[in-house]
Amino acid sequence: MIRRKGLDIFLLGFLILSIGCVPKSKTTLSPGPPEDLTGCHAIFPAEPWESVHKIEATFGGGSSSLIGITKGEPSERRFQSVLLTPDGFVLFDAERRVKGISVRKAVAPFDSPAFARGLIEDVSLLFLPPAAKPTTWKKETNGTMICKWENPENSTEITGSMDKSWRILRRDKYGEVTKEVVLNGPFLNGLASRIEYRAFKPAPYLLRMTLIQTCP
Amino acid sequence: MRSLQRIPCVWIFLSVLVKENRMKRFIFLSVLIAMAVFFADIGPAQDLTSLKEAFRKIRSVKAEFLQKRSLPILTKPLFSEGRLFFSMPDSLRWEYLSPLRSVMLRKGNNIQIYNFSDGVWKPELAQAVESRRMVLAEISHWFQGRFDESTAFRPSYSPGPPGRVLLVSREGINKFINRIEIILSLRPGVIDRVEIEEPGGSRTSIEFKNVEINLSLPSEVFEKP
Image (cartoon, rainbow over the protein chains, first blue to last red):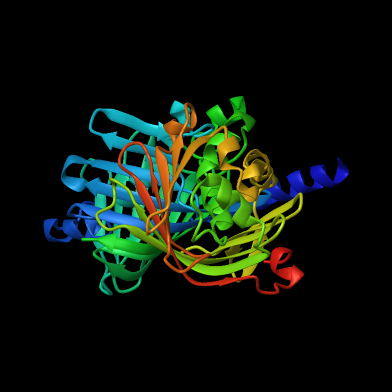
């Protein structure tokens, strides 16, 4: 029990430190020139895409390996996501549509609506830009884009360039970072080869994703 | 489970935590594992009874495999490569080398699963290991060629050539697998490939190569990743 309690305290401390280490946005932005606006969407697929990722998940007290498949149609803000075990068994299969989520297959405990919403939210952050136009954006002299979408519930900020790496920050309405995504090149068909997806709230976890197949 | 409902984004956490679905989730892996038994001297067998008799001649198997996973979502199939080691009566190493490195080790009642990550082998969640144990217990009679005693599949055999073993799923299992077909090589004791059909149009094909039978396999093959 003592050991377990110590572990809990360690994890809590780690979580607090992790959140503390994520810098808040310091750049003051305003709507930039229209010609720079396309740069805000550079990391999101513009055409129908299909991707297969190796996923290494790390969380409090454990790790696991999975295969994730996503196939999407950006113009309709629609995609399908499938999770597989390393041996190929389908654990979860769901589709994000304009009017909600359709779950085709979900093996318990992946079969709750809350789980489906969480996964679709995570995949959306990776592959779909926020639906509205950015509230502010800027292209720096070295080519780095800084774009921000804000709404009453949360904000999304992306920073980077295709020749370096990109970072996506999702903050809650209090300004605290809930998700941080780092996308590293090379970019194949516009998709990052390596992704680090770090969730801080409501529970911390880390996903390391490696692109292993893409089409077209 | 209530806490899981409150944490929708923690989707990776959630694997292999519920007992009631352990059997379902690892039927697929179990099929792969069970196929090790088919590396028996089953070339000339004429029926399931003679197959069972032939299994008694096998002491060990070593092979490589190429797995092709076809899913409706995928334009191109997903390929995995791996290798297996099997030693009578109940030692097995089923290992994927790419795209994910993962290995399942079974020796007697001891089962271990490891995933290779950050340059080291990391043990899989205890619950996942336990789930394999349940399924392996369920199909243990397969390892002895006792297909006619399976509660999961209804077997039939045609001598060919090439010889084929067909396993048709019984009620319950057919939600996950429709049928399994094992195509035997003309070379006695070797199979060419296994085809697994699932509901909804998904398929898995596993081709075996470099099959060696009755080698002396060191014990640690089944003990360490």
